[in-house]
Length: 470
Image (cartoon, rainbow, N blue to C red):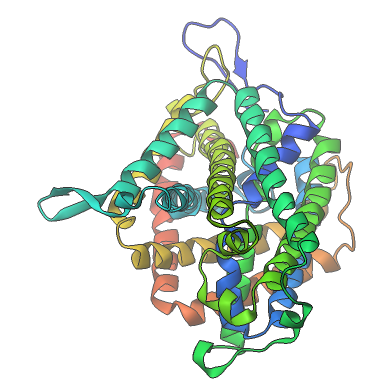
């Protein structure tokens, strides 16, 4: 576990192992179940063109995420230190690859995800107060909307809470996760027992009026899978806080595998409720599917209650992303591959306060620069998904590499189906990245350019820090 000497303290400070199985599980579920379950079903329905296609993509995304969880469980239990993929890639391939992962997360991966989640929470809030969507400030032609300001406020609030100890951040995560799960399960229960809707909705296929140019094609299913994987994304955050989990060799594998299975079950049940109440064409046309279902079942007040649940769900995902993301900055700085001051812990709360603040600042800049233009922001997030899944595939192969290069590592958990599961997961990750590159060639080139831009920064930090860890 990384240690460092803080000014004015005679003994080194270290991250506090304050997260038990329940709070770790809340971190995983709360981070994964965010905006996706409320927003992506309509995209998936349009791109696949059938209810069966939607469920096929949800199941495939669940299987793929579970395969990733199997591999990450071995890595996380073997190398239980803050930083997640940064630690795994560094150990398997060397400092450069660990740095490039961290660089991608800094440039857009994690900071872009935090910014997007903050904007999503503001979007849900605008259902209660529509003026949020309007511009409130113009500086030399540069416009800032109320949604951007509120999104920055959400990020500042969650960062502030996480400064006061990982235990407090974990407690907030558990509370928000419990509230949103209660709301989602309540909606499912009402849909199944209300007598409304029709099971005939499940046999419908798309009509010409709702078709998209890529419907039912490889690119269309790739777009649907991208939407599903955005909804499943975040399970890897658990390994980023490995340095603060009690008994990580036991907790990480159990929470990862049980958590993914639980999330997949909730997603499938929720989509059954959606299509039971709404026909395919309405799902395709409705961005807020969950809110529309709640309105059908409970009236306008039901829609408002579901929107409030969506806000809580989004804030839980935001809190989890902020808690986990800062640990990448911290681990890199502790290894001498970022400015050393970023590995300073708060003397009382033992949290990486400077890393948390820098992360919030970078996410705020992304919101200010790209958050006003939703199309531009969505395109950049495609790059984030491309880079993230590229490193997911590389990390999965690291299980094989580490077994060959470092057989001495403790391995309290062994990957199920080794070596086939890591290989299959990595292959699908490559195919998924190819799908994104076909849909967004310009953004893919931008992603590659930004990634390569990290190489000179790596050389700078390595050259200016002679004591950088090998």
